[in-house]
Image 1: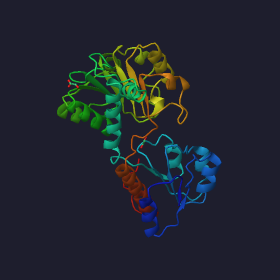
Image 2: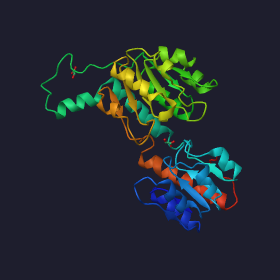
Image 3: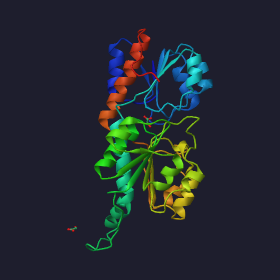
Image 4: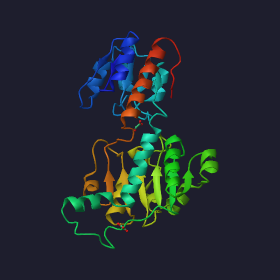
Length: 314
Ligand code: GLV
Ligand code: GLV
């Protein structure tokens, strides 16, 4: 079995206890395609990271592999159809990272609307000269509207938090979500309507052919000048270049990112903007969530290799 990254120790322990030989890439650097193939080609199972692109070429080299357990909820890094064709089961790690990711989304919402970065910087730059009536005014969340794009588990958990802050919720998704409608008193609207009506927009879509660039330039142009956009989903669901243009011209109030279009590369224009928060894809980065993700990935592998059903197939 090949684990492509340095996971919490529980995964290795579980797998060894179940009698498997485990090979782990402990290097913090991302694997190249050649390194990925060389590590995985003779393995019965692979536990992969979302930064490992597992395309046709890689899958064709996996001669013995029966399961790819992705250490993430998103699995856009894997050619799912091709894996299926080759009788390889693909699994992910849903649920256990929902709260952690929603916390990061809520944190970004607060950071942007209350200007944490500029405020913190002012103190460190020794420019805090005392309380002032107009120092670093942000905008309140109470009675403002949060637009959730993608009404799945993480979208719901984010909306639940925002509701506790006094926000009204609208959402866009393919189908109605009863929890949104009934528990949050939220309304399903069209995407253009949401872009235009929301004070805060938060993206919670999986990345696939249908969602790629769904928040395109036309959609972004509908945003209010006071509004904020938060992306903790995947960079490619958004036209990042166009969003940067709007931020530069101050056509919107600000933005918060945990994910990027060309991860791990960050558009250098983004680095220069003050009304923008940039996090290094840490949505699920709590000790608790990462441990549980490791347990789930390991259990999926153990089940499949023992001829049982995986616990969280995709
Ligand atoms: C993180 O981005 C994940 O998909 O788990
Ligand atoms: C603010 O610090 C206040 O006391 O109103």
